[in-house]
Length: 291
Picture 1 (tube, helix red, strand yellow):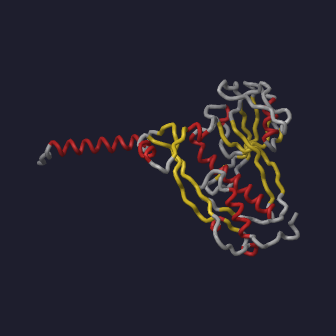
Picture 2 (cartoon, one colour):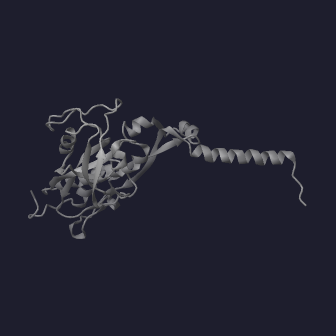
């Protein structure tokens, strides 16, 4: 036989249980805002790996700094508002007009992959090497929710052809789609690649998918013509629903690994460039590969 405790104890336990449940629920309620908070400053040197016979002893440090970006929840909102080192931004400012929240992390790693490639190219060029660049397709940067593309494409995948026509760059991709109207089908050759947490492009199989284009939404601006892409712009074409960029592949004189695990975004590019140059300081380009 057991005896119940005093009424105030039972009420306190019940109130605590309600608060715990409310806190768990509030922590899973995402608001339409993000918070930026300070990250850490870390030395670039441990992140840059070149072949030992090509490396130069590094003196001093080059640092990169990062920030954390997280979704504001109903539970964290008041704390985030009170912090002096935090900045709350509307989701539209962080995501832009096309990016769903679910794609933000993948976008960040894709931006870092692009930043790493650009850093290597800039560093090698500065050091006197010739760096060949080839456009090899169109990488998907964002897929609009509920668009025709949302059933066929994902961030980090590469479109290499439309209806059998090669699309080595974003201009060719725009021209290929420009001749199709809403309701028509387009056949895409897609490499099911993705970018991992180390900002490395992981190749995948090439598949062929068919997408029926939709009507252009009134909320989405029509594409505009650009001087460097004749035939681009709005021609009454159907709507696919992707943001895309030209995928550039570089031919570097020797391998350089940049180990930026779990760091996204493009802003570390300058620090990485300087870090690569620092490992080669005082060493000329090889005669067989110099420009």
